[in-house]
Length: 130
Image (cartoon, rainbow, N blue to C red; front, side):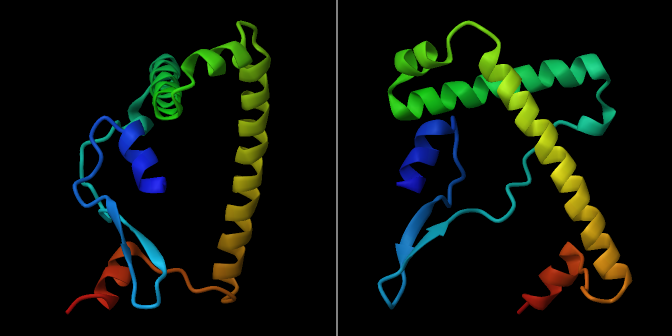
């Protein structure tokens, strides 16, 4: 279900996207670890460019979800033409951002005090070299 939905929502999903069944009958989601495709350098965007980029990403995500569900008209009707949904999403995003910042501060404090050991991607990759 997850793989089929992802294939429907993405214009070009990664070539390794799929699933497999392990020895115990448990299913596993499979995908490419790093796609290494070019990405927008958000740190170089000014406020106007960042807002425009956000609008494009939002439209692309909305279109993908509508396409995957086959319910574009019903979704549009549910959302309506007012700002209620946008306002609710903005409020949620602001609260989520604040929580994420608090969580990251706690993480950094735990690392500084030795309660957690932070490792880089290079450290992790080195653990899995042949």
